[in-house]
Amino acid sequence: MKWKNNVRHRIRKRGTGMGWCCLGERRSLRVNRISKMPKIVRIVLMRHGTTQMNIERRYVSRTNAPLLPDSQAELRPLRGALASGRPLAYTSDLQRCRDTLAYVCPYSASRATVDVRLRELDFGQWEGRTYNDLQAEPRYRAWLDDRTAVAPPDGESWSAFSARTAAVWAAVLEAAHPEGRAVRRTTQHTARSNSNRSRRPSVRSCLHKNSRNSRATQFKPTADVLIVTHGGVVRELYTIAFPHTSYWDVPAPTGGGILIVAQMGRNKAWRFLRSVSLT
Image (tube, rainbow, N blue to C red; front, side, top):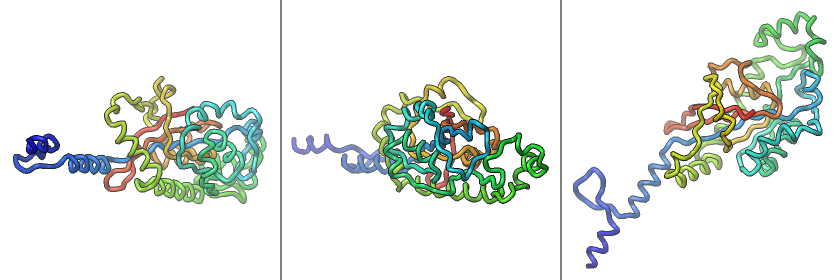
């Protein structure tokens, strides 16, 4: 009788015709399999809310322009999706980005990494000016034709801008390593809800495939990482993830965002699977 009771708590090893494996070992094997699964990380790139200089269509980078008093209305949809979460947060040091983060995700705002590398391209002498102010200047016209070859006077070159955005992107991905808080929480969620995987909403609207459908607007994002920055940085970071996308094809409206679904494989190489516009 005692032997029969012990058998109930044992299972035969799969794939073999001999030997026994205790139930505790079976659970351990299952946990090990889960830990070796590719890690999914959801990264939200968000542009700050609207300022008066945005309304006037002025070039604004280093100017610490405040949000408009009624900017919360445009931020409310993302606040509804992100406010209850606890993602790893990054923000530009300028107040319009910090205030945007404080509104859409209060918990993470107080713990966010403030990084000057998330600033907009420095427009130099063109700061605060409009297209109409500059359209007659040959250097400005040349910059519009090829900004990789021409820099604003006393401003930032495109190579310097690209280098710092690539560096901050690498730092974000390093922090999103499986041993970090963001991915560890995602892995635990995957383990708990593995049996309900088929009921989760799928992400099918991919910006880099120019595919937008109604599911994109119905999808409720869950962010593991949230980056609040400026329009040019949103576009540049997106093209790093999806290099076949044109910089100007990436939508970056004020108060809008893009969800990027990334995966870290067993070789610790990142793959960027798909993206969803949250605008």
